[in-house]
Amino acid sequence: MTRNAADGATWQSQEKVDEYLARVGGLPARIAGEGVLAEILPPAPSSLLDLGCGDGRLAGLVLAARPSITTVVAVDRSEPMLAAARARFAGDARVSVSLRDLAEPIDALGSFDVVVSGFAIHHLEHERKQALFAEIASALRPGGLFANLEVVECASEELQRRFYDAIRRPDGDPEDRLASIEPQLAWMRAAGLRNVDCVWRWRGFALLAGESAN
Image (tube, rainbow, N blue to C red):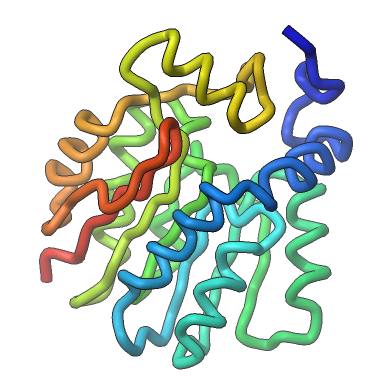
């Protein structure tokens, strides 16, 4: 297999961030998943939390789809990603971009109409994923939505390899802690979310969504 130059780097590496943004941003499957996420948003939310915001791409998409949003909190643990997000939203008073590792609780961030995450939560250990889903359920306001556009574990090693080849990442990512779809849906339901479902999937990409129980 051909090894990517950024395979041994972490998300604190500008090299890895640059490689990721150049490769993944133009993938038709990612664009399709983002389109479905925009379709399922509540009609007129006022607040958004983006967990693992990266360069701000997903927050920007949600803002474009729902101009009713007046408050955006975007967090990430990667300094190069945060720099890109701050550049994207420079001068936009609606958006606050800050450093936060999703391994730490998010309770202090407040309550929101929409919580989204794009290709970030799969880096967490499974126990932390479950705890995070519970924190998200608590952070959602009545009628709120959690939408997680995510990398998931495929049904076999062969299918996983084909997926990685399709996204031009044949060696995967050593920081991935992938889980399959069904356990994650169960964790979301156990956290107190309702109408939980996988609303879109393409190979190892999936959009997992659930609504506030209130």
